[in-house]
Length: 594
Image (cartoon, rainbow, N blue to C red; front, side, top):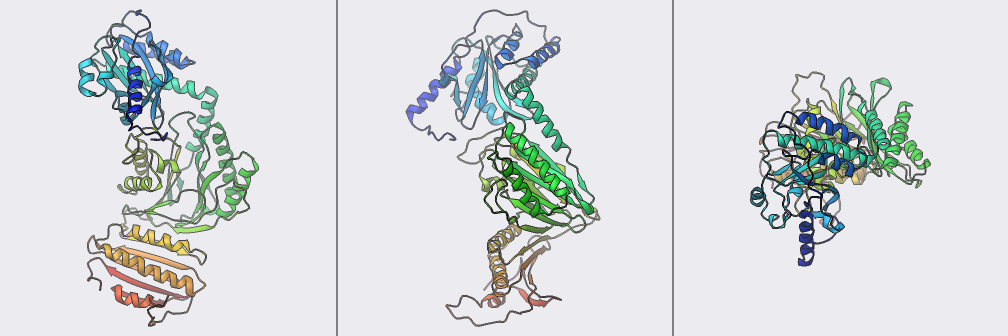
């Protein structure tokens, strides 16, 4: 569990059971008063209108619950209410009205207990229990601990604000209540009004106005430029200020180019939001001045450090040329971008990077990586909240992102963005052994950049990979292996994948060891599933041509061409106007390897 406590021991389990029992005793009415019942259906709309106006002016949770209690009557025989807020391990009672008092420990409900309130937290859907018999049938484990003070019906409803589940509202009734004739809808609407009232109380009106202004500035991000389409999404954390340290921006650059930036300032409070706004403005200004990605990052890091706020920020900034599809990317401690190919294959693009912004350690090196975006390819930039929400780590979170991003057509980039967020934010179970959540624990910022085809009706078959390894990029070999494996994720012959990785590593290593040039790796898959054709090329600018040798058993080199002869179906060396290209090919239905 998130708090590090185990719940396997009988002592702690007994304590939890006592907590649940105390919680369910919270249905004792404070008084027997009631107001005249509204007529069925005809007056519910007016009741909601009055309640909405009243709740909007409520200055505390207690006042909001007291206002709702005034609706009690024959049609809504309320005995009492409670409001719960969720963290990673528990539901905490943060307020109640008309209920018996209990100690603080009695108001904490573990999320792994089978209880109506925890089911609402997991699913985001209400639980209506119109009679004790229905409670007993649906929640037999929790029923023995259910209310013993006379409640005859219960409603557990999600409190949702800005599309995010922030808590649970319990309404207990002293008579059986059939959820018919629109009563369930009435309670759901009342819960929505209560949730909005609570959020206003928690956030404070001044902080709320600040968050709305900052969010509206990000809503003005443009759709892109001719030849490039952008989709942007922002989801705030599940509680508190409705904006945090995550941001993105789209910047029109000279020459028809486009600048994109996404980042994450440490923290989720008002200070983080304020720093985010300042840093976003500074980066926008540096980019418009004409500085390259590396220079923008250096200046932004100095700017954040000069504020002396003792916070850092991660960031990615890129310049995109719509005419060529070339992206020049600088990264400052931020998660790597993801490249979605036209057929839905997703590759984690390992781009070089420097330290997060604001760490004044005298290391201002933000190397620029170059990626060429082809027609209908999409580059995804996101903050870590998209990956880790729901208890995921970077690995399992990446798998979830890949599975959500793969289906669908590249033409519907907004649909891809919405489906990706739904997969991450919707109620779900993170992974075996972790607790399910239905609220975001961190801000989420998302940018999708698509290169539009010059001819939308043209088919763009095949699957491509291209990357450049500089002489100082030893780690680049490992990154190239990972991207090749991703490119071949559905290849019918798994042994071929190992062969491709081995041969490509040999060719790239030869360039880095025996020349002073950069190595350019290109790979392309064509054909239909099961009978596809793979071609891999490694190009460098050196005129020195590799020669076949007969290495001894203890030799550390000289085996590259021998391996090509043994493992590749076809290979050769092609002279270039400057340098050479060594290529090899494999067929998916080719002969068995020796």
